[in-house]
Length: 246
Image (cartoon, rainbow, N blue to C red; front, side, top):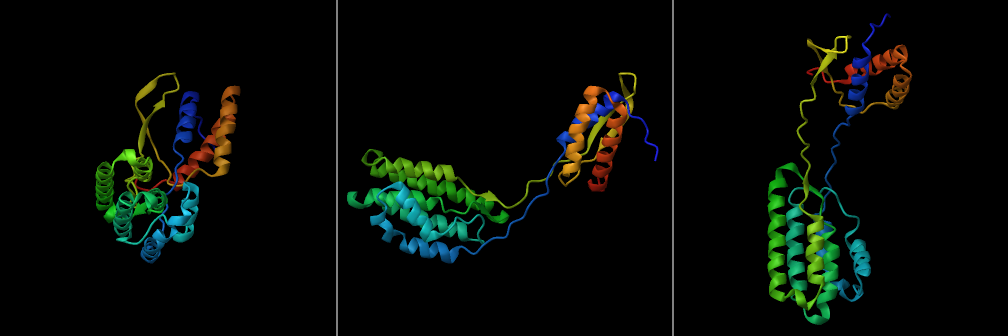
């Protein structure tokens, strides 16, 4: 098959564009049932008080009790978790001096078990709940007095680091059709020469990435024939993978 020659400037700009358009398809995760695990954990967490002599010890005990942190739980699980956490953390803040620091260490560990994502339809309510819990605990800490123990501040910092959960709803993909001027071959851009670039939804395969690096070397050597062949191979793959509506 005879391949039409491409101007050198168009070749270089096309190569730069190919490096920028590699993308990956979204991944959807399945939610897990967390209610039973979280409920059992909060029912027993106070029994770990005597073992929470250091933050490291508290972390180990809570992790053994709750199990590995779950990324995405069923609907309603995040609200149940945060309401239970607020009750436990508030109680820990107001505990007697003998128990307070140990319970606060446990609370610091427990908040790190919060689900990291929620179903899309719960995202707004979950973010609002997170802010409300943080506000309520800040008010309780102010009432108790930060001067009584530095662990009050550490608990609120841990809560802030965890943050509100993300939504499972994928971000809306932007319009990936780009109009690129095509070189006229004389070093200037033709006003009527506009070519659409089609962006694939799959990442570039390894062989295509290798060809991009090889083309960079060919550009330095000004080997236009080698660039043209490899560039056309990559463009053919992109056009076969790009959405038909682009």
